[in-house]
Image (cartoon, rainbow, N blue to C red):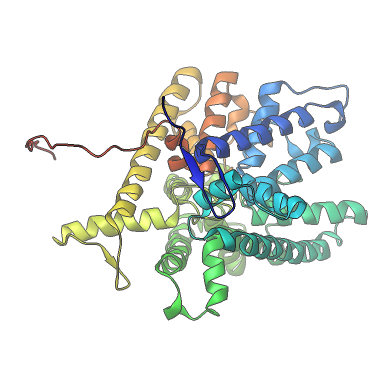
Length: 459
């Protein structure tokens, strides 16, 4: 008779479940619930119209995965109730399903169910069980405080344009949550293009994107050490360095590429503000303040690189993450120098972590190849635009080169099969490659013996 495996904690033992499966199942439940609500007539501006279920699932997935790719114009197609549903889905997706389920379990039962506790530890990986309650409470207070501050700034600016203060309040909250959660959804058909000359709006959105993309673990470390750099953990240092590099270097490149193209209409200050915004938003928000039809090919490729790298672990963004990219590049340089151990900031990086980084990098490339291959077969679209859409979906960005339909993403022109492929890519991009792949992996068994070494020529 086979014995069942159990996970034990300080309270009691419960049957061990695959945390990755529960996390993905939780996201799917949220997505389907959102799709059902968005399919209701009350969610649509014209209650005589309808939305097919694939488009409803796509919109819900894009919101929960904080992506921002749209197949229906959010501003005109959905009613205030529908926009509210999208807002709630964005907030849930930005915080993470596990965080929300754990917080409400704590609030109602005053204790964390062992299964949920185990799943939470799998997602955050940094804390002991007794730290979770305090951590989640502080995270939620921080998130809502930042979003409230953003809402106040937006309210001040939007109230000068719209006379209806109720509408202004909703617009302000919606864009603050969407910005902090790196979602890229907007209640305006032209996204933020009409506010390209408003530095308060542009810089507030940029700031919220950066803060949300840093990751809660890094933010906690920064706050705990009172911004004293030398005391920060290696993880946090990498996050800060990569964030600075991925803003500074692309800023100069984008400015050079686009000064006489998409940025031509602005004065020097406007060019700098919108350049800064446009190199921040691909990591991984998806707002835009410029005409993408005017972008040059080098700029588009630059945006794709930024979308591919994405934000930092434990935050609201997607992509392979800044730390993953840093470790992959550092390990490569380390090998070129003939060194075996990877040392960063006088700390040795465990080989298992380095291998995970390469695993994430490799599997992501494989996902791109398969998704693009299938989409080239199912869709009659330009290959480069399809490539851009796939990278945007995986990075949970939401930027798009657009298609035939106005005010929507290119994916709106896709067949139902093509949309389902993008849905899959968005979901994997949000939960992470390791979580998605872990469903199919079994626990490693130690080999009782070793085979002779094989010599294989590479390169």
